[in-house]
Image (cartoon, rainbow, N blue to C red; front, side, top):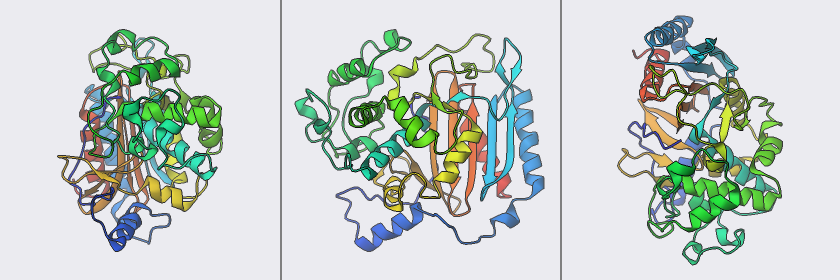
Length: 379
């Protein structure tokens, strides 16, 4: 689940407090991020059946060379253009990947955690500017100035849980939210809240804990009731190692599964599994107000903070923003032992590319880039 640093040049501006944006600039950025009903474009002229056939052939070739194993879905304005599995979900059993194969999605979990927070805000149970100590018993003094917004935007300053001294020893062991909280309390602060961006799994684990404290339900139960059931995402949930998820491998040569990481140690930062078909339902819902009103969607898709040294990349709530060849892009990647995932959305054209892989390497982002070029006739 550790962040996979795949970025392109971006031109969106930073809107975090202190950036000096005018009201007009902020409104422009919000309009770029939120596109519920895009105007007709020439995209349908660019996407030809031939390009989809070419993409399928390319993915099949990559799979035959052992360079890709997983499932891919491409859709345009709600029409699925490609939904296909490649390679094996289980190498020992010779089970093929298919569109309904379940994969662990690592940090794609974060966008669902962010949505859960916004749903609780709509319910009047919190505000994103609330201080987190309002919801955490025995809150450390160093956390007193941290808000939920800081956690959502990776600007809290809390140290990274993967650097906890016993992480490697305990990563495969079932862990309670209280145990996770105790570990987080022991971490030093890296900087003052709001001072800068630093990708933080710790922050999203804390968000998962806050969701449980406020809702009175487990993180898993709340997401199931508030998101997965309403969207008919029947193949998405917390991985309990009994959910018929594909076997994750370290590379193309592995015959044994990658080192196991128990989902309970990832919590709101990376505990989920899903399928390309379920994530397509998620993508479609984000163009509507089915889960939350537009005001909350605007909060999710507003570029709140600039990501350092990434060409102007920005981050909202669980999503990253960039500009690719003149097209605004909303994206996130995920990685957890044996799995790599990416969802890339082109909101102006309502195009989505979803790739879930059970082979952990860095080719997935390159594959996504190749798919995009072929899709837009630029290859």
